[in-house]
Picture 1 (cartoon, rainbow, N blue to C red):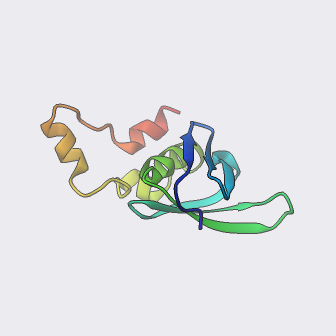
Picture 2: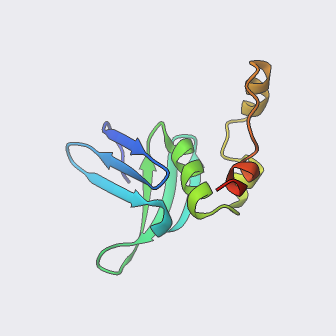
Picture 3: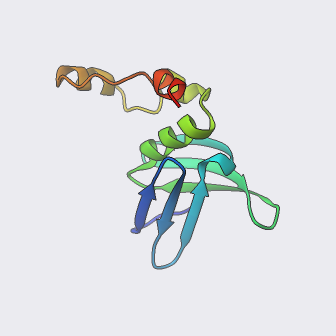
Amino acid sequence: MVDGPGEVTITCQKLHFASSTIGLELDWKALSTIDLVSVATFQTSFVNTRGQQVTTMVHTPWASLAFAVAAITAFPAHPRLLSGGWLPPGFEQKCARFGRPCRPAATLAASQ
């Protein structure tokens, strides 16, 4: 598991995590799977440079965002993405109350 204080950079192409003890770079299109296992943790698998399938969990306050960007980029039909299951309960309603309606993830994925 990748955890602890560190620098996280999320782009449309990848996630880069760096701390004093570990570095991790995940190219979204190179992932085999991704899922959001908690509000602050996503789990993913990929084939490493040695040809081995690796599964890792990344614990970060940005886990929901990382999941959504990865899913939109590499897994646009992911059930959790399409259902809004990656958002905290009531999130869309709270946004609407503040005049900031959320676009459904299906619409976001379709625009890619």
